[in-house]
Structure formats: structure tokens, C-alpha cells
Length: 410
Image 1 (cartoon, helix red, strand yellow):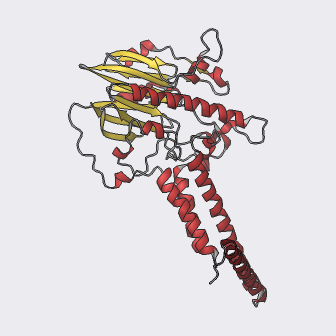
Image 2 (tube, rainbow, N blue to C red; image 1 turned 45 degrees about the vertical axis):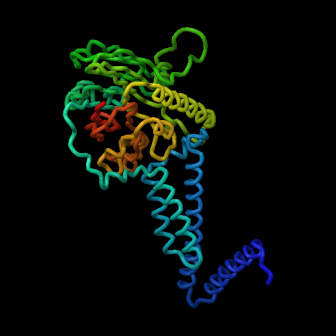
Image 3 (tube, one colour; image 1 turned 90 degrees about the horizontal axis):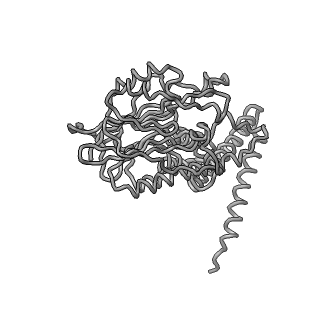
């Protein structure tokens, strides 16, 4: 008995599929009545369209998983909201069920694979929230909060910002974007806030550490503070303008004296991967160089943070705006060295940021919803620090971000 080659079998399968298509097309031509012929032809092309879209989405899903944090253009691939990663293949799965002939099982199978990839590699779904009971918070734990203040409450005013922070009293505040900003001026638009006296007045008895835009306010004495993952100066010369400092200082470590122990806190604001309003595809802007630079900066900051956490002998809390979605693999290295606090959240889909800028382009009615679509803010513990509660708190219009609220012991 002679076995057939795989090539011959594949050829026969292709021929059979083409024969089926011809038969359908012939049936369409032979069908009585023009409406019926049109309906059958539309159904034929509907199946082709759904299968093509499902194949394209699967290609994107595989490329995202393989290239994330490995290629500078993956910053664009990771920018898709996690809701879309799950919602798109779900919609294609439902659409595939309405296809006809061979395209129905093919479209549903391809969509199912893309859905499986999303659920296992970037959906952002917090499955432990469905069954985990966080239980009571033990007495004596520390409260640490983290918030991107959106240019120090620029939209709402500093008085309202301070009132909000007083409403959430904490032992340690990790605050980002403690800076003044004037739109349209690029790096020259960032201005240092010389408001130490006001900070001492608003936080009496607290200790203050600041680098660039990062501000850490602690009830406990600060033993040391240092930049982490700081990029070297671009060239020998004087200290750069504050705009350059704003771009370079993205992780601030402070070591706090808590009784007879030391607790390290990392205040994080990783470089923004891209600003959509700067990426006009029809301009002469060098998009490749832009993504290459952004990726290099982010790599330096994240890898520097990973090394410092791994070498730190003290219990540590790492929190802030990582500008990283659940779709990205950029945090895999940190997760290998620290504990991601997401499973402690009671939210099945934790989200922390909404993109408000489209309102400037009259897209507000479509995109600028009051609920966030992304999660960019994350928190971790390491070195023996333990989290007992982790939650996102609404910022009451002060910021596009939600506040992270942690209860810690060590």
C-alpha cells in the first residue's frame, strides 16, 4: 500500500476547497431571483471577510507576544487597550459563527486561538478577584499611596489637590508629576516647583525627598535617597535644564527609618512610550528614531530598577506610573524579582488611566469616557515586605490616573 505525500494531500485539500467555492458561486448564479443570488453572494464574501480579519488579528496577537519588550516598534503593538485584546477576538468568534461552509470552523478556530492568547498573555483580567477574600487588615500596618498628580493638580488647582491628599492620610506618599507644565513648549515647558515651604506647611512633621518630577513625602525619617536607572548626561558640560532633568529622573529610591528597621520605597514614573498627538503619520517626523529612543530610555529605567531591587537588602515597596499596559511584557523582569500586588485587588479588571487628549481634537464624544480604558499604574513588594490590601481609588477629577492605596507590613 502506497502512502501519499503531505504535499499531495495539501494540494487535494486546496482543490477541494476551490471546488466548493466554485459550487457555491455556481449555485449563486443558478439561484432563481436576483435578491436570493445577492444574498448568497454576500454570505460567501462575508465568510471570506471574517476569516481574513480573524487571521490578521491572530497575526497581530502573535507578533505582540513575541516582540513585546524586544523591538522598539512593539511600543505601538502594546498600546491596544486590554479590553480590545479580549473584545476583538470575541466579536470575531461570534461573527465567524454566522459564516457559511468551510469558513465557519476556520474563522472560529482562528478567533479562538487569538482569544486564548489574550486571556493568557495580556488581558489584564485579575482572576483571583473572583474567589479571593482579602480579609481584615491587621493593626499597625503602614499605608502607602501613589498618585500621578497630572502636573500637580494643574486642572483642579493645588488647594484641591492638598485637600484630596488630606482625605487619604498615609505614612508615605509617592507622587509623580510634581512639576509645572506649559503645553506647546516641549522640554522647555517643564518648570521646577520651588514649593518646599508650602509642602512643609501642608505636611507638618513629614520628611521630603524630591528628584525632577518625583516627590516622596514620608512620616518617617529619610536615611538616604538616590536616583535609579538614571541615564548619563548626553555630553560633558553643566547640569542640564530642568526639562532634561524631568526626562532623566524617572525612579527615586528613598530609604526610610521605620523604628529600628529600614524600608525602601521606589517612586516610579517610567518614560511615556509615545504621545499620540505627536505621531502624525503624514508628517516628516522620524517615527523609527522616536520609538527607538523611547524604547532605549524605558529599557534603561526598567532594567536599572530591576537591578537595584535585586541588590537591595531592605524590604521594599515599588509603586507608581509605569506607563505600561497589561499587554506589555516590560514588567516581566520586575515580576521575577518582586511580587505584583494585582491579585490583592478586588477588581476583576483593574484600570487606572483614561486618555483624555482626544477631547482637544473633537473626538470627545467617542473616546473621552469618564471610565479608564487602560492600566498604567502598578505596585510591587520585595525583600520581605508584605501587602495586606491593594486598591485603586478615584482621583475625583484631579488626575487622569486613579490613586493606588497599599497597606504594608514588614
